[in-house]
Image (cartoon, rainbow, N blue to C red; front, side):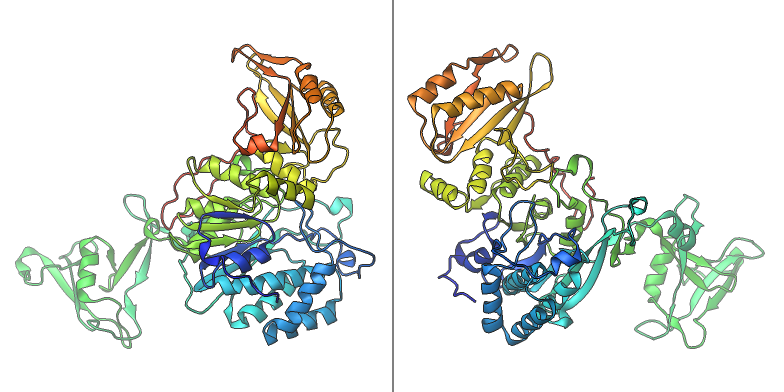
Length: 583
């Protein structure tokens, strides 16, 4: 492995968002054994055919880096270098495993994915506390290979569960020629660092069928209960006593416990009987506990005099959670932010409640639209999120601010000055574009909601949009945004004016890394104003904003906006130990 730099690790503090490749961020910032729970949902293009995934690639391919929503991995220089580091410098079991996988699979997209995942899982194992757990979310396309990788890094004895989450209802593709069973589930691979891991048992509510079969009795007040045997096979403490009961002589009332042992006067008309557990059995509770059950009205006595305990369904936690989860639907309604790989909040809440405690640190190294960190914050955990696109980081910031008004957190990796902005534009102009759009809270063209990659195509001169409500008609209107990172001229402003007219937009915003010329300013002024009678204001129809000004706090002059992205609902506090469903 490449040598780790001198540690900035002691400097990292939850709650923090990182922009960048998670591998160097893990190595540079996250200390050993500092994280209680890791959830990761690494992107992988499972919709591609197996023939494509396993075909040897030829020609010059891009390195195994991620672009927003383009989750295809390629065998390139980065994958080759990472493979070499794993094969020569990793622990012997890991190096042997990765070499064997390459011999078996070949140098293709699947192997590139596994190599890049193995390098990251080595680091994730390092940062996990001895009491920590890891949940890897994937689909059956590569889950069997990932399980091998996890076995080699964590140890096969550290495997706890393979959880199946039913993520959708039945598909009806048979009429379109589908020749397989419908694919409805994702896989969650659950591993721990040691055998002493945090575990809080989770339960699901009883369904009607279960209540009718198991809790088939009803108390006078309508509560469901079942009767439970009060004997045990092994002795322990006060478990060999007689249990005295009584009933009215000749009466038809059920047996009642005699709670006052000194009150034995037969003149009152009571008939007494004493019982013991039958041969080979003992009482499961002490006499004192049985008396308390009797006082609480929790005992039922058979004609033989043998007591039975009433277990009420509404006092039970529910059915212990199993490894098939069918009760959590995908992100729907107000929770759906339009992000292609978004997972429901309830799914992450369940994982976080089961495998961490309030105050613990939750890490998501592929945090996408931020469901894991939002769930962690809601459940009073600390969190660290990492993502390689500014588009995702922007969405995470909007989501956290919407759900938790007044929240404070750090963002590491975003440009903080003009020099850093220039460097980002030089390194990747699409990442620069997404970051620049986030400065004015504009929705990128090709961002969440349409599943595109965000790469330039037939965008027709529109890089992003901001929506607001017209105060006269009550209908939504748009400000369109263009971002420029290179040379600019007055003709760019004329083009923007034409685009505003063609798209019937209210405003046009021109964001530029370079300062505008006087001719550009004159051209923008000539576009006139958008009038807003309700707000009693006029707004420049074409506005030029420099990156330098935006970094100093400048803002767009426009009517109050609607939500740029679909807004996450404000979070309601979760009760300790209670699973919540915000769907």
